[in-house]
Image 1: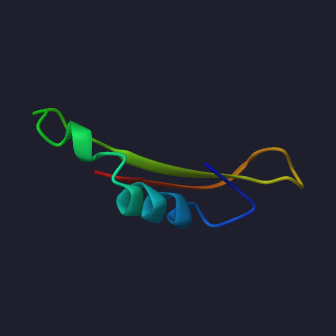
Image 2: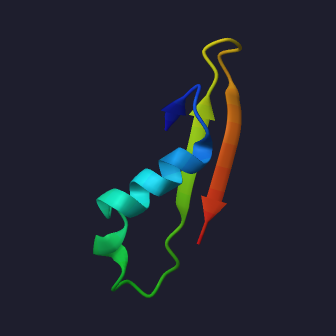
Length: 51
């Protein structure tokens, strides 16, 4: 999750820190989801989903 920053930054952090690495041996698909919250509107303002 990010606050007032691009959702793609969350995806980059997942990759950089290796958060999904431990699930690589699992046969099920692993999805990386980046989500941005807007402090102005209090809602989700951007999101990205990658397999």
